[in-house]
Length: 485
Ligand code: ADP
Ligand code: MG
Image (cartoon, rainbow, N blue to C red):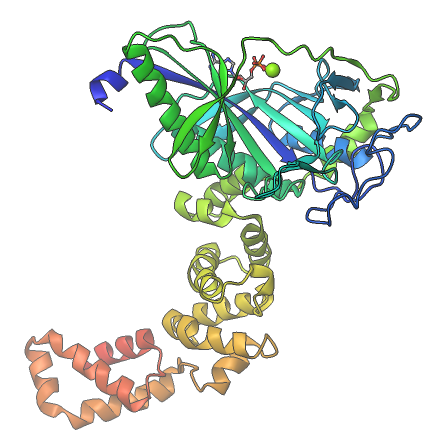
């Protein structure tokens, strides 16, 4: 699209993110919430909403939702009711969905994002509420009937609703990346968009640059990766601009994204307003979150990526780049945290984790939990380098892989000794070699003394050769300089 035309408009974006909570059982009964079971095996009469059954709220669901709220700086509602949202759909066995319409568990709050091509910004949240998932309709190829699988009905969800605060697809991308990182750090959702445990609907409108009045929004569904949310937003902004430029009007509708073409197409208009007839569920009593309960949840909060980032930059004096890489994945951050309780050479620890550790994991396609070198063993190796017993390059190229092979059964020093790689830092022993070399090349010594300082490298080379590369270069260098001057 022509940049001049694009620049006439500002996009306004609000996201609605559903996260499936990692509880063992469903939100209102003890049916398994496991993903991937055989169809219709996790369905009791309560899931199916048979007459006479009563729901009972899963406490874990509330705790997980509150954790997310705390991580997003929200106010936590102390009294909540659950509402029935009534509609008919084949995958909804009860004929209504239990949700929180008027008393969402978390209100307001914000998520800080750092988009690649923009300034860090706070994206404000409208709310986070608890609700239950619906079942699934299945349309098999060549089958004219629709099949339904109710396993997913009643699996707990939280829905995170942003204010229309987002202005670019980059910001939306960063927001979702951060939300995924948070749910994974909190261990409340696996964050897998491909399998649908994290889902995002994007609301998009455009307005003339400088305007304060938002345009009519279009809701786009069915993006199964963060990247596809970004693509859908980019496409939708262009589509709306072109329409307006052509004198057409944008109307509120729901559109679906096609990942193959990168385009959106209309599903249904929002003209006829849905009447969900929300009302408080008479079978569930209002939920009271006591001060004590809230406090115990607060106390169980793990360190969050932003906190760790700041600690690494401010306390450990690491570059922001390092802090970013180290906190990107919870498991890596936990390993690094543990490593830093065993060494105070934080920069070396960071270099090890970002370098040899990560490349080994990548090469072998392993998770860090599967790394045979414990943080204790790696801390020993860092110490060995700091003590000049081995160089970093020998440590990372030879000793580390041997330690992996030994599955951590040997200390770093034992491994270095096994490979005969311990550097000699003992100046007496090195001194003998230096003397030998100096005695062997009297002409070169004379030339050095006349000013050909470049010969130092040749002397070093000789000392190294005689020691099989095991002397500490720093010590050897100093001894040579003194002997030659
Ligand atoms: P609805 O009543 O259609 O559900 P809401 O006001 O509840 O609309 O908002 C749903 C989502 O749409 C929120 O994420 C909100 O930020 C976003 N949104 C609201 N108005 C706009 C707009 N004009 N343009 C883009 N997004 C919007
Ligand atoms: Mg709404």
